[in-house]
Image 1 (cartoon, rainbow, N blue to C red):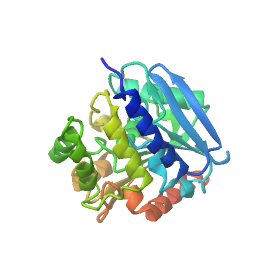
Image 2 (cartoon, one colour):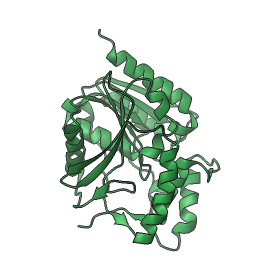
Image 3 (spheres, helix red, strand yellow):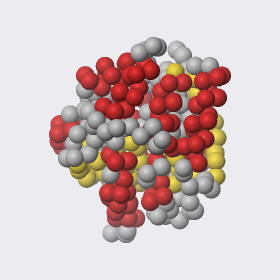
Image 4 (cartoon, rainbow, N blue to C red):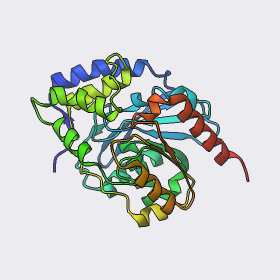
Length: 294
């Protein structure tokens, strides 16, 4: 099995320029941690000061810590925040061994939390990061105080055919030059992609320069969803193209023991950026309720 990496040293250098610009759009980190795991080194940025239960952020594919630019400042109002660059994806993390399945995905993330001495966290995952978060919650629930899933991939519903086709095109040399911007335009509900936006630039450049070698995630099972005993906030975009939103929301409501499941009718898969103020407020209210003694 292969490991992910940049297509060339030149590609990495080009990516680093865009990544650095993206990082500059974030608040200054209080600390930077490179955590050794069995599958590589995970880069984690720590923001804010200790206080209440820390937040850990897992981005969507190729998003890196930069993806949280619309949300990070607001979330710091809760307290300390850790943003992870995912192993096996573009960013500052480095994959050194093959990741074979959901067990391996949970293992490296569990190691990161353990090495950072994070005994119980508010875990927030977006898109593919949402699947990672749910996967960890099902396999190491003791690590979580709460779970927030923002339009997560393959968690409450399977992928749409359109997503599979368009995502595949972005990986084909020659075609991917036009397929990448077309994909970002489509997944954002037809909105024009701002080429100066640091989040969009980092995602596009990561898709262009990095070769992912991760296994396709498997849909989180009914039994796994029923096993999630921690409070779960699920924000599902009503215009999402990654799954069928109505069916995903219905399945989440049926199976999550302590789920707060919300279908946002006008939102696209880019919900955390396009409706940042509303998403931030909803997450903060959810976390505040979980911090308040009953």
